Image (cartoon, rainbow, N blue to C red):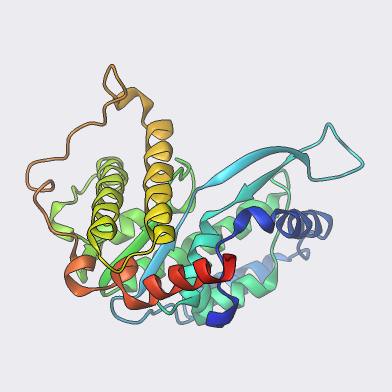
Length: 287
């Protein structure tokens, strides 16, 4: 992806995303024989899924239900679910700040096969198994820092069932979303809960950082605040039972509240020059 094509105005592009979803639904993947499935399973164990040091990014969630039918001629059929996490990922990839599974040899190979099937098709489970295998290898191969975009990730999604466990078992990972790996518990459920709560804290800190920057523009401040509000709203939705009587968020574990965001220390992720230039350029284009 070229920097010039990086955009974040997702509200203006929903029609094209709907069109792509309808095309996928209208053109299910190829029929596969047992021999072809076995060959693909073997390929998933061999294709390269390595990522550059400190650049890996995993994504899941932000699936937004709509009242728009996938099939225009069947208003009572399945509705379109808009997927926003992958759009956020494309921004960071385009800015050179992240490297996802889709950037690897294995990810490109599997994506290009277009193994899209309705859930009631047995091949849907086969395709999911192929992505599971590839995703697990990708997470297990990460070195250094890893970023995760997982607001609203489903309990039975690839991230929650496969990738997170591989991340927690990978001792070559030093930080997860800027938080030192040692703070994350070994339980996937507990680690996911901490990840999401930390993301709210992390966004709050970034907003305070931008507010304190003398060279920050009004647009930067507004975007940082919008991002904080969005991440907190996703958290409140997914962990409503953990909120206090006045919707207070639960406190952070001992040590985490005082922990540094290593992305800020290193000047990476949203603290990078590339991100701030992107936001300021977006503001200039909107004038």
